[in-house]
Length: 102
Image (cartoon, rainbow, N blue to C red; front, side, top):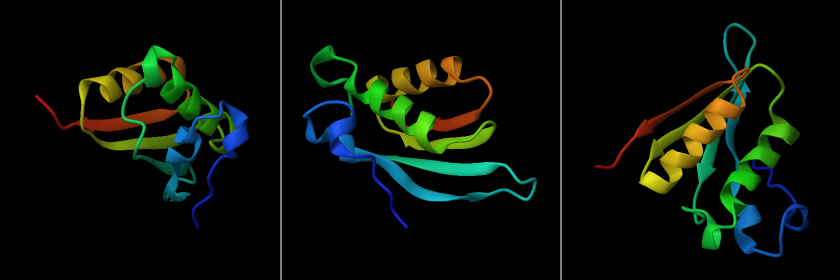
């Protein structure tokens, strides 16, 4: 099941629907697992921090502590920067992702 955050939560941008739970479940140890599918918003929209706020809202709403949150293959430096910020801000979660650019 795909659950998307409401568009009205952060801005009038259509980007709000671009960060959502694609896969969810539990590990064998009982931790919640989320895969963040980051589709259209691949950078901070006009340097306004939209992408970071969307991911933070997602974590606050859906990811109980401690959760495993996987960003998958990170395709560009902008998204990798967001991944690093989120990983530092939420140390109670196991946040991972693979750098897939030069």
